[in-house]
Each structure stands twice: as structure tokens, then as C-alpha cells.
Length: 405
Ligand code: PMP
Image 1: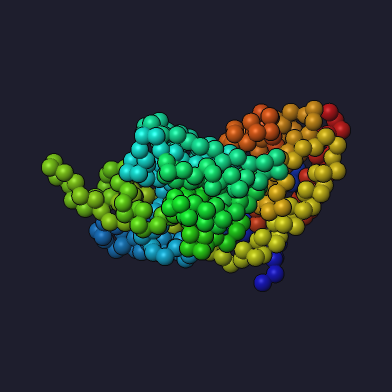
Image 2: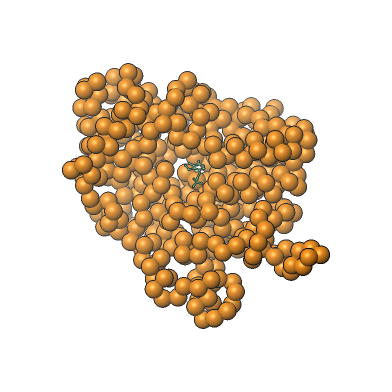
């Protein structure tokens, strides 16, 4: 199937508008992607046709909602090629998925003096929960560094792994540098020493075909809202053998088998980790987003994205005083940069006034900012709906704005 950008854009009504009198160019999909009509319709259909609380088996509507909800679990399993449906836990996002593992895994497996290895290029969501667990357990977070090109120094990993290492947590794709990390190799090295690995796939799943079994990830986490799905929905994939050994994260309805004042027995997987009423409409609409990604095809998505990335990088490299953070040969559709003498906030604000939505600031990755000695930067990031013309308009606008300073 060829990449029909016009058809793709037709499904995103939100893109067809003007902001500040200029056609909207949305270059902030890494923060959150826009939603196609299929996703909006799936949510509306649920509420118009068959809404009810799931898993209670109370009536026709509840049963139908449960069936649709559980079908999406199967869809997610197939999407990332997990082995079992019960290895798919619905959460409210990547952040909650990581917090769940940081609590439950560490409660059971992390002891005083132990270590968790986390890369230097992580989003705060993949650093802070481990620091909190380390504080609770008197353990330590150890840094796996990256070099000035924004590539992880994997060669240092074998020395960093010690008897005390209980887990390694690393991004599949960096939200700042765009680097596609060699997660298969990291996992191979870790497993040689029997250390499990959590992969933060938040910036990978919208762009790359992910196969958790081939990768052999122990945990893989992501958010629906970056995949053209609704916000408030995320996934934790975990190998059954780990999830079964981990205690529940939150207590409440659904996660129990039986409750009495003498004590509680917990439900089986995946429900043990899904306390309370989940985001029913969000999960069901997420199913529609997964279908959109599948129909578009990851080969097409990647090819289109590389074209955008190359044109944008070439154009940016012509600008005097430009610094691009992240020069890996394996990059996703993310470019972070600064132009000497211009504050990233000023640039972001002026781009916004030109109709171009970008992200500015520390990008929730202070350790990356510290590596480069900067306080913030400008980030452009691409989605399936972005066009070459948009990149060209962005480059022309940026050049004009630069001359103003
Ligand atoms: N990890 C990475 C790599 C991210 O890019 C993000 C979102 N910016 C997160 C984690 C957190 O995702 P969420 O806010 O959806 O929980």
C-alpha cells in the first residue's frame, strides 16, 4: 500500500484549521498525537449504543462493553506480539505503568543495597519512580550514560551490571534525542546476567513495529495518547512469570478474588493489577487507534517519517548557530535543537504565532539537558499526518524568525 497522505489527513479533522490566521502545522506529536475520526467515532458509538460498567456481568449493556474492552486487550497482545492476553495490563499511561512496576516489582525483589540501572536519556517518568523505590528500599539508581551524539554507551553496560543489579530500565526511543536504542542488545547483555529489563516504549510504538517476544523484554510500557488514541489509557506488558510473582499495586474492586475482614485473596492476571473501574471508553477507542496504525502500516509510517526527518535535518543544518541534540544514525521523527543567541521559549512562542506547534523547555528530561549544559530546547516531532510542505514552511519560517533576532 502506498502512503496516501491526503487520505490520512482527511481522518484528522482537527488539522484542518487556522491558528493566529495561519494554517496549523502540528509538530508536537511526541507530546501527544491528534485523534483520527475512527477513534472519536468509537468512543461516541460506545456512549450512544452500549455503555455499561465492565466485568460485572450485570446486563446486556455491561456484557457488550466488556466484550469490546476485552477485545482490545487481545488486539494489544497481537499488536506487540505478546504471548498471552493476561500479560496486557491497562493503566492510565506510561507513567502509571512504570510506577506500577517500580512499586510492585521493587516491593518483592529490591532489597537494601541493591541497584537499578537507568539510562541517562530517560524521561522523568522513567527515573523518578525508581528513585522513589530506591529511597523506600535503601537501594541505588545507577546511570547508563550516552555520548555526545546521543547514543547509549552500551559497551559500559556489562561492567555496570553487578550482583546487586535487580533491573534495567531504558527507553526504546528517546523523547528528546530521537535515538532508537539497541534494546535487543541491552536485553541480551542483561539476560546473560539474569537481570530483567523494562523498556519504555512511549516514543517507539507510534513509529516502529514492536515485537516484545523477539525483543525478549520483561516489561514494555506505552501510552495510547501518543498513538492517536485517547489520553488516560496506557499499557503495561509484563512477562507472566514476573507479573505472577509481583504483589498488587493498588487495592479495590476488580483486583480481588474474595474479601473479608480476616483478609483478601487477589484476582488472577491481568485483573490483579487493574483495581477500580478502568477508562472503558478510552480503551475501546484505543482499539480504533491501533487499527489505524495497522492499516497505515509500519513500513509506510517509517519510510514517510525518515523522509520528513531527512529534509528537516538537512534544512536545520543550514542555519547558522544551530545545535541539534541527537545525531544518531538510527533516529525516530524527533528533532531537538537550539539556535545560538535565541531563547527556546521565544522561538517556540514565535513559531506558535506562525501556526506551528512545537514543544519547548526541558522536555521532562533534565538529565539530557544537563548532559548538554542547556536549560531547554525546541523540539519538533512528526506524526503520520505531517507533510513535506509543512517541513518546508517550518524551515522558511524559522529562517525568517532567526533574522529577526
Ligand atoms: N516516557 C517517554 C519516553 C515519554 O516520551 C513520555 C511522554 N512524554 C512518558 C514516558 C510519559 O508518558 P505519559 O505522560 O503518557 O505517562
